[in-house]
Picture 1 (cartoon, rainbow, N blue to C red):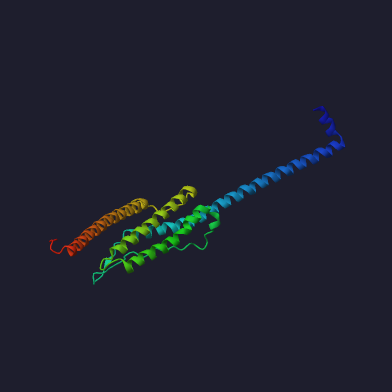
Picture 2 (picture 1 turned 120 degrees about the vertical axis):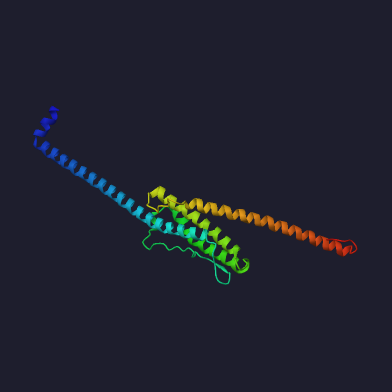
Length: 227
């Protein structure tokens, strides 16, 4: 290191070492400052993303509650014995402050499907009410309404669970009931009822076909008793 001592003793050496030290300190300051800015931006964006995830979670949370009400709504009977819905039709309104671009595209897609699912459920239940369901109980209408909104509720639970897992958002304390179990149980019950209906309809059609066959046979051979 003797050469460095001698070099530093010269005027040129003093100038060069001073300049080098200055550049080193300045460069270190730039690196530290840049790193600080990077981490600051990272944590700021992370807080922003969580905030917007929370906005979405609150909206989905309310939709889940509304879907639970409809999924278990058998209606109320008025003075004329006609059944009408007790639970209002769920609606969804996205917060104006929600920035969708901060959320993953697949999650955004699943959430944005929900309004269309609600519209489709309303149209399907409305068609059954107008053309298929029979008064006074209109049970076919209530069954369709319950089934469709139970499935919307189940899709909403999937989104909320994703928000909890990925962003650690706060959510309602549903200590005494599990919406996922409620929705899946309701869907399974309705499918069981529909399977029973299909079997009964098949049996009825078979009996009608047998009677029609007997009638045709009787017309061909009127002397043969059928009964």
